[in-house]
Image 1 (cartoon, helix red, strand yellow):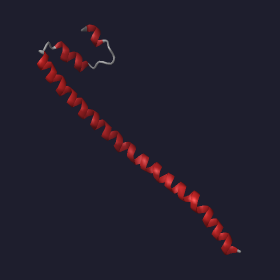
Image 2 (tube, one colour; image 1 turned 45 degrees about the vertical axis):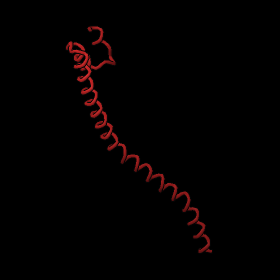
Image 3 (cartoon, rainbow, N blue to C red; image 1 turned 90 degrees about the vertical axis):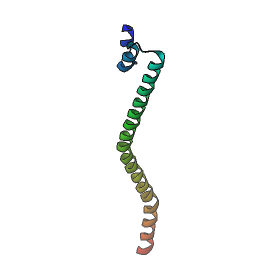
Image 4 (tube, one colour; image 1 turned 180 degrees about the vertical axis):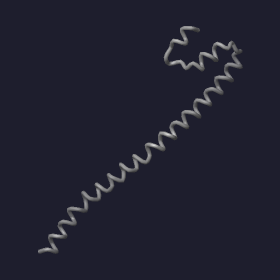
Length: 86
């Protein structure tokens, strides 16, 4: 089990579960509970990250819409000014 602790991709919690010496059924229940907790933590972190990223993306989309508006309508506006000034 010592080599298992040295593996960078295996969390310490899993090593603890395996070292406890539980029966296969008990180990299965513990790992199932652990996986559910990890999933909840993943969802929570994802939601926090989305809460930060979403306003930035909405700002980018707003800038793109305004840019498209100006690109399309400014030339028409300038053409209309030339017509009225002549």
